[in-house]
Amino acid sequence: MVYCPYPWFIVLGLLLGLLLFTLDSSAAHQEQMMQLLSDPSKAAQFARVVLDMLNGLKG
Image 1 (cartoon, rainbow, N blue to C red):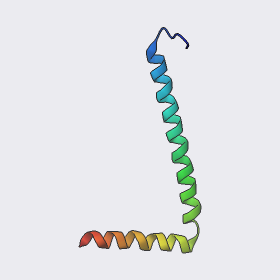
Image 2: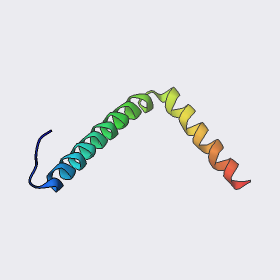
Image 3: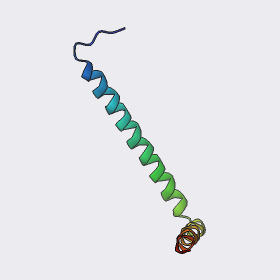
């Protein structure tokens, strides 16, 4: 076990690691989404799903 005179350094390090993980995950998700939506047929299918969901909300 390592002694740390400032325990909040540990918390800060954990939060920084979590932030970096979240940003990496978000960037990967966005890249995958752009790859899928660049295909016109998949983009049309996605638009149809979204419109069906919105029409379902109208009741």
